[in-house]
Length: 151
Image (cartoon, rainbow, N blue to C red):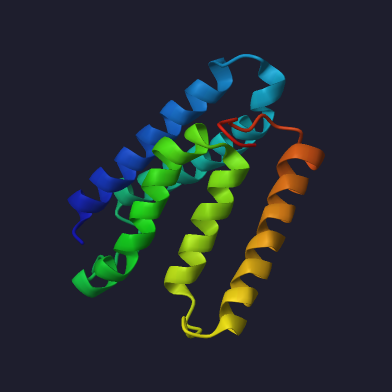
């Protein structure tokens, strides 16, 4: 990856971070956006730092993503895009998170798909994930999560 490509890509990510931070700081009610403000601020700081390193030519660049790696990541990226742009709002944050996590776990878990034991393990891990997400967002941080058809 040459310097210009790295500057462009890190600049684009920094721009997205600035937009997300702006949105999180201008939305109401302000209490509901406390956690997004914190996360977006950290994201902007790291993105601007990476962009500055790219502009100065001090960032370590690799060879990019190979075609094989991209093909392995494609199903996960598709699930993530559906989750972010549709599912979380349509069916609810916790339901969509659970389904997306279970699909991603099923796609990338090396355990055999023809054994009941591996499916039970995936279901238990997914239930644990949902419990942690609920405790973190609803009970501990008390942040607004998108409501949909379900919870």
